[in-house]
Length: 101
Image 1: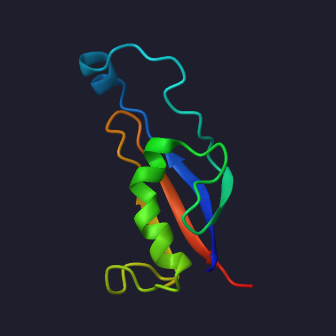
Image 2: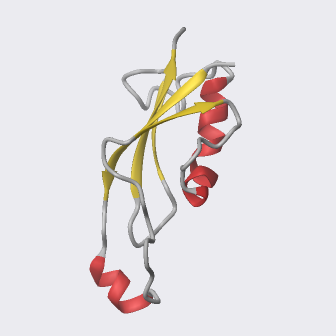
Image 3: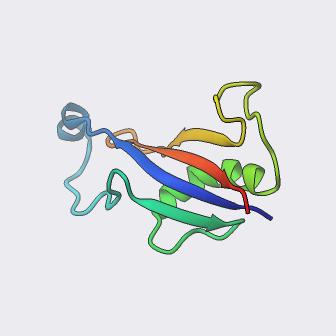
């Protein structure tokens, strides 16, 4: 099984939606742009957001098992994917890349 590099590419923050709908939260998202995690197959990397992992893990598993060309040519690098977590208030975009060893 291949390892997958997960890079935090971008964090959005929709303050208008947060103010209107969300209960106040402390430390809702600890991810930092540029942060890198290495996934070893199905294992969630230490320190990686559980909710984000729920969104990313099917794509991580596909790439870890040698899958490529997700969504028929969507990515320039066929052994990668750009996936966002499911937080509607502060979504985070992640680049998943197969590590060739």
